[in-house]
Length: 107
Image 1 (cartoon, rainbow, N blue to C red):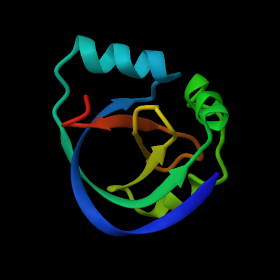
Image 2: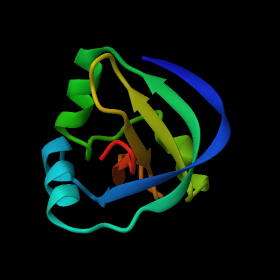
Image 3: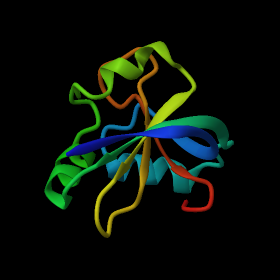
Image 4: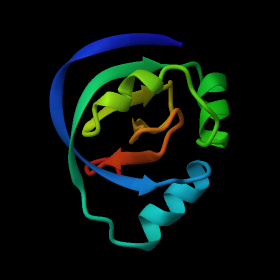
């Protein structure tokens, strides 16, 4: 996994709250109207497909790279991998992906 600090930019994102995994996130985002939130994207994590699949399988697992985000409640991390949907992660005081979402134009 590689990290890249981005010049902060705002993006409309629909977040799923406390999803267990990517399936639960997609189910919530497709079953209910969730109001998009304006969030600051500040960092990009580029993962291999294997790393990404491991991450999306269980969002409740502690992640060392999420912890520094705890002091910034409206900031999020973009998670990308080849041929996979881009995920946006917010920690909201936790050490795991408490909020996970998709940009409005993607989902």
